[in-house]
Image (cartoon, rainbow, N blue to C red; front, side, top):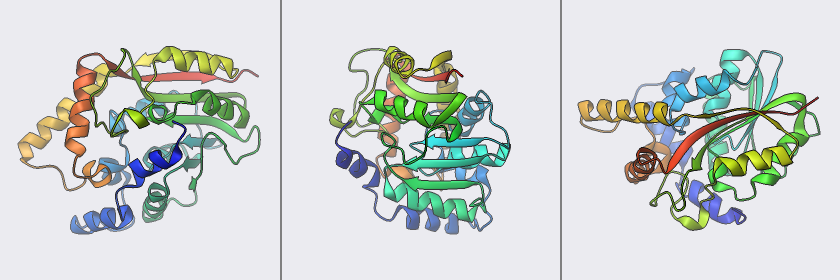
Length: 277
């Protein structure tokens, strides 16, 4: 995706995101300091949610001394979780100003401003010195970026030698794999789904050595099934849920994505790569 105005319009189209989230939290009686398990109901929008973040982060060799960079951080849910569980300092960068404003507010309400910094910016042109980070990761970001090669080159530039780059993205297993809208795009013009081979080639060209590739489809399908079961039992969407961020058509976006996942046309794929010393 080269036209950033289309991308920001898609994600920033929901007016007053911060106000809407705070109103929902207030209605639920949630007050600072906010628990991350409460926020996880809407601030981890990727397939598998918090459980996916746990599995992914466990493969990234993060500890309390790590400096970590989250590319396309959104509201900062994974960044806050990783910082809280490891003690690492996590910086998140995202193009969408509304997400960054809301994410900073949530980080403050979770009393985590000492460990998590969220910044507005383009991950294809990172404002950091070379070799600044021990770990870089991106979660469900590449579906919006056609120029993945530049992202991977930037990740290699800011990583220290021996550092890890983790990717957990929705990837295409067939041509024209989804019916729109889906969570990351309202139409084909701002979707940039690619197959795992594009990621592997781009990573290797940027100097990375690929350590592992894991298809998380079965796990994601199980998560969606359990989510649907809970909602059916409740008879209504949860007060805190993806609709807070995605808007009123969240259900149709998710249904289209799950249909393609079920049919094997797309998959959530995790790739862990290392920058050689």
